[in-house]
Length: 245
Image (cartoon, rainbow, N blue to C red; front, side, top):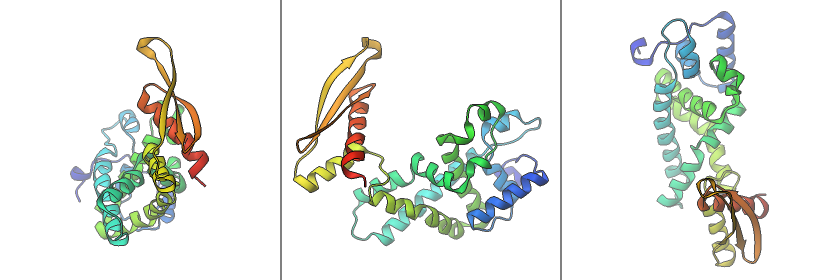
């Protein structure tokens, strides 16, 4: 694929080459185009500071997001025949989420390889959830462009299927309110009851405190900038104490 299609990557020093080869070994797939992989690691803050015109990883991220969604959807469809469309949507939403991708990126050491600008680096950019999760999607896009869909699919399954099972074991949760509601209905044929305990602060900057009652046991209160976020926070407390093992 031509440079015009994939973008202009930063130059690669001998030290950088070793870093990329080390990452490829850790990833466990073949990547022939080091410039493409280097581009997948290039955050826009780094590209903006380069003395020559340099692209960032956002186009590869966009592509990788689509490849990731397709690969995860296919695995769910093939391997979980007892699940329904609604189940698939909830599982996929959690597994391809920023939190989930961040966990995978941490395990692979993406933060040690990502290229960020000086300001972003000083503010902890190499540890930021959004930067690392986006970079993970760009890596999937890179593998797809360099090696094709089958290789990208195998890599995604290797990295993300454990995340699927973690979700099924209640170790990854995107929506705590849904999680505890399903648990209550299954365990006691009841639904959680949320109570607004109090509000604090002026009208333009109010904080809401909400508790949740699960079959007679109260969790919280938890704070939020609105009732919805406070309910989610209370549900998370309940989940962590009652459901998560």
